[in-house]
Image 1 (cartoon, rainbow over the protein chains, first blue to last red):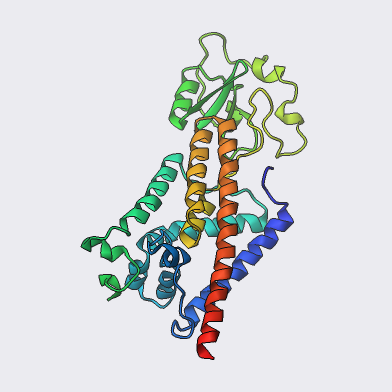
Image 2 (image 1 turned 180 degrees about the vertical axis):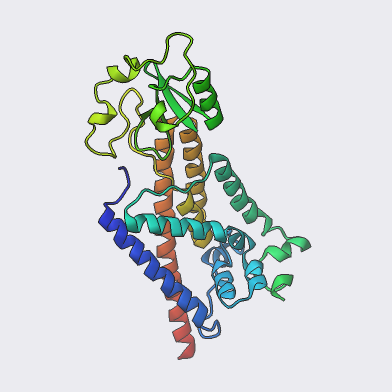
Amino acid sequence: MESRLVPAAERRLSILAVAGGVVAVVLLAVAPPAAYPIPDCPFHAVTGAYCPGCGTLRASHSLLGGHFLHAVGYNALFMLLLPLLAWWGLGWTRAAFFGRNWKSVVTPRFGWVLLAAVVGWWLVRNLPWAPFAALRPVAGNPLLG
Amino acid sequence: MWHYAQDGQRKGPVSDDDLRRLAAEGSLKPSDLVWREGMTDWLPASEATGFQFGASSAAPAAPSAPPAYAQQPPSYAQQSSPYTPPSAPLDMGAPIPDYLPWSIAATLLCCLPAGIAAIVFSVQANSAKNAGNFDEARRKAGQAKTWLYVSVGVGLVVMLLYFGLIMVGGLAGEL
């Protein structure tokens, strides 16, 4: 099958993914942000604008610390799509481990919705007016207050 | 969405309900080959669906000679591997990979703007696949894969350089 690894390689990849996920969760949950300050997103550092992914790392850290509203404040789209991303990740990992085929079960129409959401989110969180401040992962966002 | 084959021609996609209706009114014979995503091969409609089949207006659905099916040399029963692609004339080729989840994850977790390009191409690939336009879908999926690899590759390099700079800067600041 095109672009499909041999099952053994896929299984190793799935084990690696689980291990990496566990390490990431432990680091994000345990490491105090003061000890390991999360660096600025490179896109933001270079352009001064926020990318659709700006704030995901801080959002993950807040979520693991139990601060749900802060997590939403850092990246609302990421928090909205997190269940879908988790579902995809679990589905792929399970299928890869057991050597099965995996399908994302996303209809083409929903794919277009996702594309529009990502691009729209990119635009909207960079609008300079007041109500959109709540979408930016910085001080001034009321959710991060 | 179902695809079905009649007289050596691929038809569809049609919805579950539409295919059921085609079967009920006799337009789709139990022996006609059908396929939808997730199936490894084309199967006769009677095996794949369990629909009620009405009498065809032309001929009763007797198991005499399923023409389109029998004329094609490699019938599905003779294929050795369960992953052999569906045979001609229903040339699906290999399954078309779906890069959308990876593209979304790449874009949200690091890698603009190539990640966006990967999303665009994977969405187009899925649309083309759904419309039965498999060559187009394959091409778009290939482009999505390229952009996905570019975005993740560039993202990794940028991240490494960037974190390296920050660490070096931090050390320099402490000295």
